[in-house]
Length: 179
Image 1 (cartoon, rainbow, N blue to C red):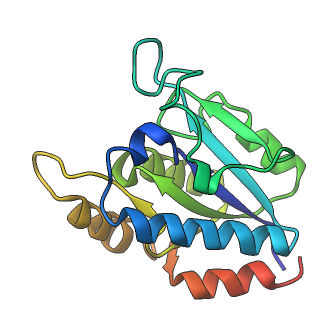
Image 2 (cartoon, rainbow, N blue to C red):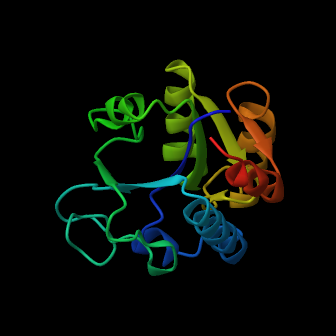
């Protein structure tokens, strides 16, 4: 069996306060996965983006804080990042390697930015990536709606190329399996 972690990326107040696509469903699914992981002694790792001084994601501000409904327990690791990739200059890969992790369940924001780059970086490092359906989200932009971006990345870019995009219930079953 694989050594698996749940990686929760950039579910921060400033982003949730802007109400991304499918917000409530995504938050509920992430919360349920966190509970299932914790109940089954699977590690939950959090990634928090610091966009720099004067931004909505400035270190120490309300917007930078991890959203309360999915916040870490006191003993859960928070990886701080300054780039779209959760791996770039963060120590995440070294940490995962030390723990012999081979499978990452990837959830969070934003689909076309930090989730996409983190997914592809993890793929380049030979991790198996699982993306539960309706656990990542983003916003409308000048070209596509948040819904279209979600569908495009999950089902045209990632699934069966860089990751497995599978139903949340299937992921919950994976989390209940012994390591």
